[in-house]
Image (cartoon, rainbow, N blue to C red; front, side):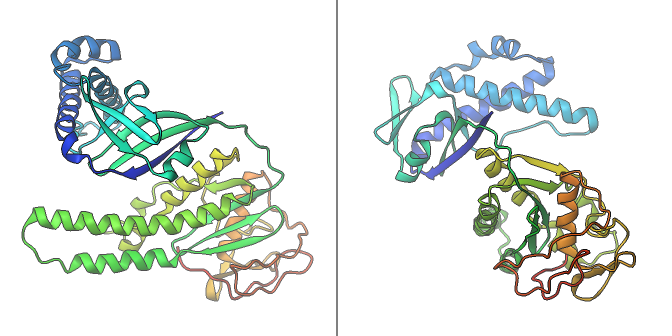
Length: 386
């Protein structure tokens, strides 16, 4: 099984690459426009149509990279149009260059990139990048005005783990429950504080110039994204480092639930629509697959509201506790959800079987364990609303 990752670093070659950025963007947009007008569907037909017109004075491989990008965008456009007739034509605005494997050379921690025939630029790669590229197969290189991004891959031997863990993602925390009857609550409330802070900062911009406002929003948006992603990386790394198979709920249509007119407040909708539920899922998935751990998804409906012991409807109590009138279980909402997710992934059906006591882990403040017959009382958990 082959898996791919990327590593990046900053560079200072923007001025030397300006002409290539313009050419690459022009090629992609022209190829997209003509391909849709003439209904060109294959890479061969697109190549015959554009090669003589667009090879110009730049390195020939730039044309091939642009052709691959245009082909992918045209394919995506046609797929989307089948579902949505009024979809806009794709148009590339950002400066980006994609280099195929034959176009660059890495030697002695320096990558050589051609810009024109027999003209090159050289970028020194730092120690972190070279460490990541050691012993792996290097793929394509993507250049932006600030970054160089190198993809690499390796063959992974899939592991069949002895243990599995169910992951329940919430707005302020991430809760896991594994087959050893252990749970962990990871606090993510700081991500919401960071988003709220930058929201206040951006709301105070008073400049009427849209160009400057856009630049400022982009600057603070990147800072916010980097800080939030760093916290999510710490959590995803801890989860994957346990060496367990991952089971997550397949969350879909979240944004549709929090739209104007749905009966929720503006602040509440704002918080829910900035929830980074997919980013945490993406990080857990690629990190798990990179080490050979399996990842599977289950339906999300009823994971928090159905009893993980007997499967009946739970009754909400105070402090995010849920109680079951059938088996008399009292359990935290998030732990119940993560346990249901694990049960579905392992194809277990709740039937009120006896279970061991839940074992306390360091990220949980305190717990009163259950006795034989299931969870009886769990209190003082670090949790929050979805």
